[in-house]
Image (cartoon, rainbow, N blue to C red; front, side, top):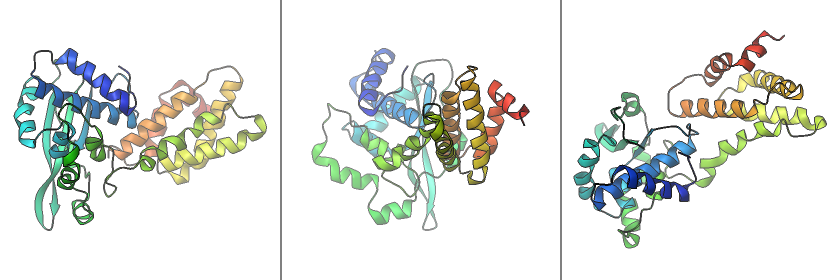
Length: 289
């Protein structure tokens, strides 16, 4: 399975749903297709492995229903069918607003293929904060406002993932997402690939720019010199014909950044350091002066 851009993600989702839910009626299959498509987009955005079998994300049920052109009551009628097939698990997410506990959306875990492993929303996903409900209400960034603004354009035959991705790809206080906020960090980290291809007289500047991008992405501004040392080490290995590890480093940094965004690590530098030590080129770096 290849994680692709938004337009193609929906095509892949249709194919996955066709193979996986052949005996289902049109409603549950359309719901599963939308959830798979959103899951593929989230996996691509967070740089998950292309062998990932399930993805968890946040989105209000009303927005998911809007994406497939149905009423939310129909969604809740179709959802148990997918749950019984061990393809989707959905749990309401709650927050405190004005001193009261309120549901601000739903956490979804969707599986891309049938297997014996039980699909579940992990407890850690329910503890996370996905949005600032008070700010969203004040700014009119709610699922109900989304429905009100989009009612004239609903078409039952189509699926519009943007209604779901508005929530699934955004961070607390930044709903809805914008293209700039979505891709800014990813573009910055592309500086890692510039290091081995620039001329030798420009290499120091490229190393510096890549180290700055890494320290910013991992929220480790005090570790910039270490990142520069890593980049210079990989440059020497490549010059000596002992391997090109810049792609591996880029993927490691992207995964650590995703762990930070999802609340699974406190120190991006510490996590990257521990993963570097588990690699052959990282061990050699630790042994060098």
